[in-house]
Length: 70
Image 1 (tube, rainbow, N blue to C red):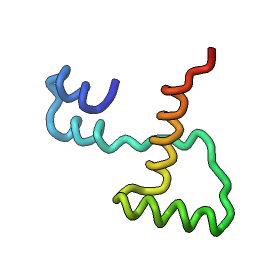
Image 2: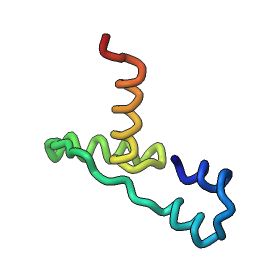
Image 3: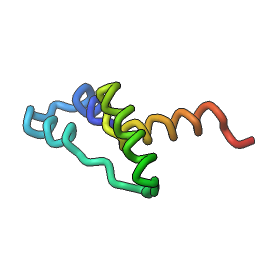
Image 4: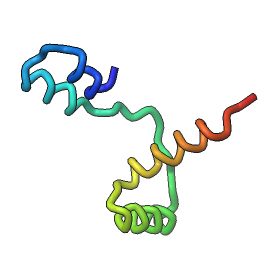
């Protein structure tokens, strides 16, 4: 259950809601990039006001969901 679903489906106080919203995403794997590739990705991510890791997650999930394995 996502933190926003917890907010809508429970009678928790604001402290409990804040704890749910601040949960960290656990790293599942890493991607190794050359220094030049990393700099290029980081520059692009910053230009769209996003972290490089958030951009990577978004693009990976988009690829998996739009190109499912048959």
